[in-house]
Image: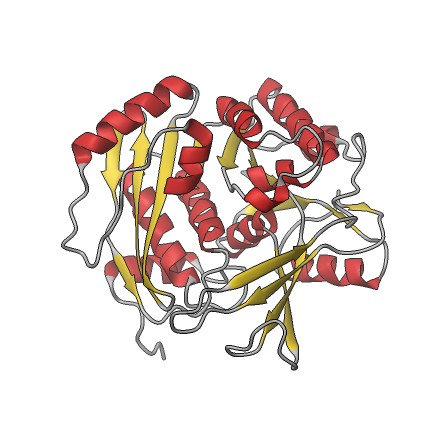
Length: 345
């Protein structure tokens, strides 16, 4: 099975320890970007993945592609051009202080992508799944048009479309940008959609169901979810699976994670993961998405296992510095069974 992802790879610059962005001191460099993170996770799980993007034709672009190749990705249709790599600056949280992200993506190689730069015909040859997200559509009008072009072609060829709502309010700023309309259109073609409570609210306008779990004694309101998913299914009738990722932040270093899955009329709930300390929460949603896509290919007739696998993967991501979830299928399964965290010799 071949999976295609499309989006902007970013250079992430993070402060050491608990330093603020304006303090003197070094930055740690790593790579991020939602769709790149999904692709890396899938490759780590053993899937055949091609990542499509645009990077500058200079040593910085070369380094990004080398990083992706080292992690097992096919980047043979990446487009070269533009002046610079998009970046973001990350200030980690500490005690009661929130983390902070500052994007620097204007005029990046991907942001200046032109419609027609990507030739989808050879990319979609033998493809089975195409994954995209709201972030890509938010970066520029050309990126939006290119994504929708890919969606239409994938639909015509019978390629399954998966979508992460991935709403980032600060990115929707080009003339005529309409997040609600665009995300709605993406979801009309998608067989699987992921989002947290707030992202589903942006997509649907429906008030989210509160999630305030403190531990595994929490009980999901199944009647409320049944009514909620019934309304969502009427809005997005082609969507066969809808996943809501839940995260209750008890503090910035202490989270409780869980998820609820609607799959063709049935509702499944996950176990709870009480995670403390949080090492790095960036990319947790991407880990969720990638693990669910992988699990659907691996265990297509077991939705409960797919859900449990995806939540376990996302929980593990909180323990790994950087944006990308560098864990194996075996490690995720061990975490599901509670046998992780020991010394393997």
